[in-house]
Length: 235
Image (cartoon, rainbow, N blue to C red; front, side):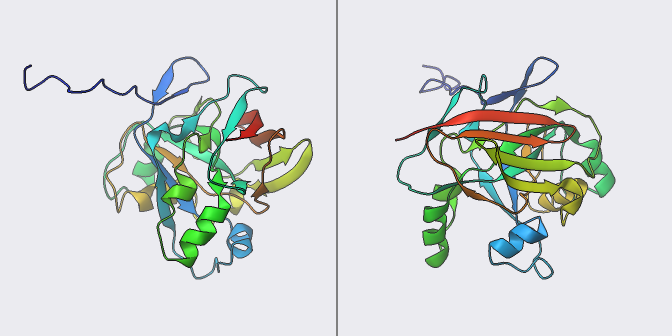
């Protein structure tokens, strides 16, 4: 065996379909917390005093439903999984210490995503001062639509929402984000070197709540697209 040979099979690269054809290879997934004022309040925060904070999901957290009848795999070790609809930004470039202008130029496109959260495990982690990984980074914790290419375009408004079995649960507008898309990208680049292939979840409006097996989820972002699937049985 030569030193250059891999000692185990090389894992497949997580990808997300692109609306015009092709696949977007996922490098890393960044998430910003409490970026809508009303959601910050419903989670016990004060939007007037908090700086943006971030957490991550593994690249293979992405899950793309083939159609509206696809069944999202309800995760194990939890009895309370919550939906959080978000605008997802896909990057075509990156760097460190990006200006707002450079951040905008790094945008490849957008998708609709759900930051699925094991809320009971998150509450336990918060109470004990532990990381959120077990609550946020589980398998298929990022259901995501196809990516709509919008190179260098900044979305500053548009409705975002989610309904379950036709009943509205989350409603908001991208204009309500505390930190807009370029500001979020630029802030993340203070801490990590961003690169093509990175995905960024930009926060969720108020109204987060539980999902249950058998329910039909439909989420959308105006001007981007929608995401629909059925919640599968608990593991």
